[in-house]
Amino acid sequence: GVISVNGLGISELGYKVSSSDIIKFNGQKLKSETLKYVLLNKPKNYSGRINSGTKTTSVMSLISSACKEKIFPVDKLSKLETGLLIFTNDTALAKKIGNKKQIIKSIYQITLDKHLTQKDLLKIREGVFIDKKKNPINSISYIKNKPKNEIGIEHNRGGVKYIKEIFQKLNYHITKLDRVFLGGLTKKNLPRKHYRHLNQDEINILKRL
Image (cartoon, rainbow, N blue to C red; front, side, top):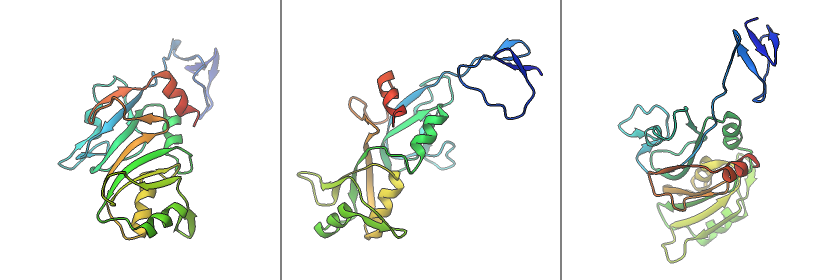
């Protein structure tokens, strides 16, 4: 009975409220946390874990000065993986982006432990069977003027884990992975190890995914 929503006393457990509701506790209006959206260009040798128990430093240390609100990465890049990583306290958006079935355009530049054969490149382009399901990708190509073990790959769902599974299936090991594009966001004017706050247009794009 000490909590009210829009002037009505609430005693029901699990009562759902929206961001537009006026919620009071003992007559005092509660303020909702300001939503924050931060983009980091992650360097290697930083753990994707929130609390890293290893000698490597957590990615959380790189965005600690971004805002007073507690923000967290929407997905994971491992210690050796680099590139775009979104941090937010918008749990609804984080859940959507982290959903394997969500369609989100991502572009990766990867380096393999050996040259990718033309035959295997075509296999990947057509779709590799994983767990008895054929998984085509959007596009794959050799990077121009680079050795044949440096590849550009674009796909819409499954995240980094799916990219790894494709190459493991064909007996390749990814030695470097850099996410250069994620849901309309790029690394343009964002040096490695730096972060920036997303503007409203970018936030709207992510929410429309």
